[in-house]
Length: 232
Image 1 (cartoon, helix red, strand yellow):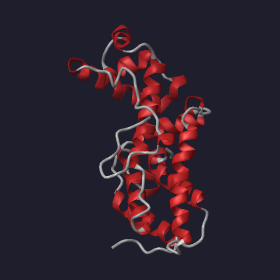
Image 2 (cartoon, rainbow, N blue to C red; image 1 turned 180 degrees about the vertical axis):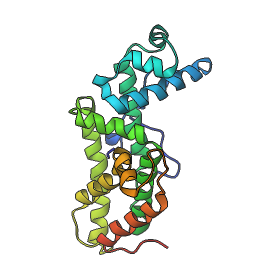
Image 3 (cartoon, rainbow, N blue to C red; image 1 turned 45 degrees about the horizontal axis):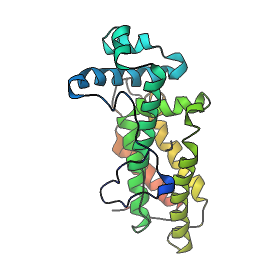
Image 4 (tube, helix red, strand yellow; image 1 turned 30 degrees about the vertical axis):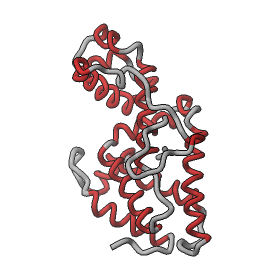
């Protein structure tokens, strides 16, 4: 799954100006200390409702009920569900841009292995957040229209890095863009299809999935396809 101008991540250069987006702005990010507990409850409720039902299928009544407050109380803190949804969606995209970057100066095997592991960790640790993006795409992606140009630019930077590795003989010839899309699909599956994964593994519905075996297999699979050995 793909991936709002964030402060540069520690150890990373400041992003190119053409690839920047404003930080998510909305009621959640404007919360004062005395309101943080309620806003955290609203945020958690909104994530759960939007991940299950999308923007169209979610009501402010459902968000309020899940947050343990009344609908009038909810509207004291937010103008409407659209504002809340937009902020959460942009936060997802902002987090993905910051976390899922990689550096061409490092060893390709280490960079790709770290990228895969971070994508898997995000899928396992934040499945509901991930599903908000997926459900938005399934609903037509109208709220992602301003995001796509930047997403293509961020992806192109990764494609250029991989193509540079190929030109230097560090990675076998392949389609770099398809490689990235395959990684997104294989890692995102553990968020979007967590139920199916547990069924296939014979696990109870609420049982944790052992992620280390998944990470080892997926890293070895992807790196093997690139003609690389998995880092020790």
